[in-house]
Length: 126
Ligand SMILES: [Zn+2]
Image 1 (cartoon, rainbow, N blue to C red):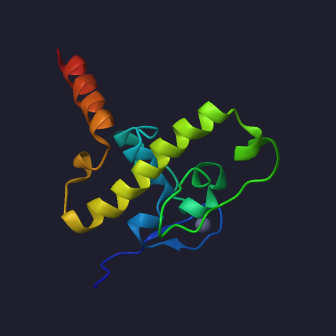
Image 2: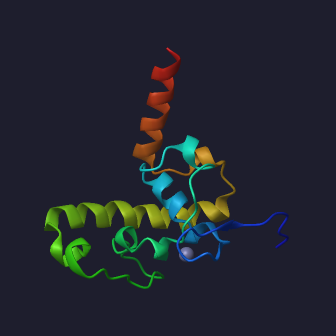
Image 3: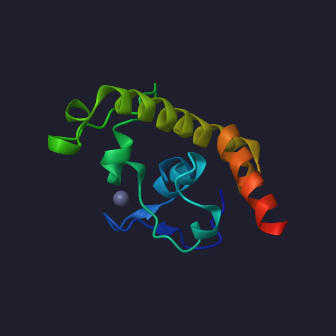
């Protein structure tokens, strides 16, 4: 694969984030936590360099991340954990999926997030 420009550097470890499936920024976007307009301005991070979010990815193909202490899954309320696991895991699977589909980035987010973005855009123009 040809690379025409320098990839984005992770603000945590300083290494290049060269695959979208490693991008915490895009994962946040897909699950509706990062608004599209800040995608280009926010610093990039590897998914694994943001362990708080990464611990909620429970999927084949993703080596589990564990966080110790107050921010670890074992210290968080069970309903919050299962809600986040569902959301972040779906987001990560979606991230893997969009890579091969050649979609426009506006089509990346989960269906409910996309619906909300469209609604917000409509409200902003009416
Ligand atoms: Zn990193």
